[in-house]
Length: 433
Image (cartoon, rainbow, N blue to C red; front, side):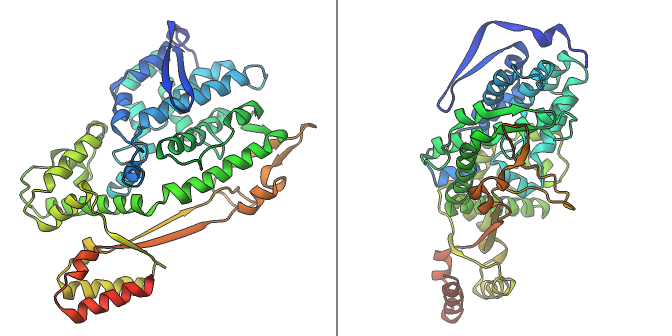
């Protein structure tokens, strides 16, 4: 790939972003500075990193913008360390930095909740934003006509340069190393803390991946356990998941009303492409959390009782109660029938939520899930998969932990006038507790 002079252009003076996790984020390349200034990247200021988690951890208000800069900074520091090794090609520097900065460009409002509701894929939209008629595409194309495609392929994990891809997307990458520390800082917990400085020092470039010096194994153990704890203590918090449930139900109701021809007091103009499942990149980019919150507050005043109630619950954090749940279809079926007898719509007032995590695993012979292991580099040059050397990591390898909860509106159930139906519902819920 032939690069233009623009690719080598440096700012007259280094720009820095003050950052609570990395102290400073350093920008010297004109290309990176121009990407940061694009409207598509600035939109990430209006997308929360943790979706509804602020309902459980009040200070978790940081954005995808913060995180994206953090991932860029970690990759920049990786490259500084890699430059002394012959396995690193300095021509890949701008590719790695650009992919790191733009890796989350396609996230929608409330992130993964939004994807579940409207069946969108943030990675697919990241690719579209990079390749279609956008300011980001214009900047990348000035590097070379092929550069946008190359950046998109790194983010999409289809680029032939496996080393650069592994720096941004693997089981020990810049993305995870930033979000664990950043999310830990903003939620006020200590679970996500690990010795990143040590990990960066023991990372070594190879043809196909980032390797870890064997002497750094214990720092990686700490990192993987931090990730495990963050998922079960923070990311799967029942209140946050309850917020996702409520948002999901609000959007389901709004879409159903739109499809039925309901006359909204405030037409959901920005949502119509999503309701019709005919979304362009520019439709997608118009939607951020400021827009979504505007509609949620407007829907509180709607004539439809269900939409008004659900929107008000989300806006005012009046969430459903929850119980542990085994996922039983029989229980859900029984509740649905009892809800109908009580005059409560089961489509919007009973919801089961399942979640799972796999802290660390790797593909065995005969498997093809593209789950690349973390490899240790031994002093004699031998490469070993980390769980074969670490008892701690071996203990969590391949362990797929699952969880499920049932969410329900307690006050609606207590207000049921048919005492026999009310009693049956309460008894059924008590069996779960």
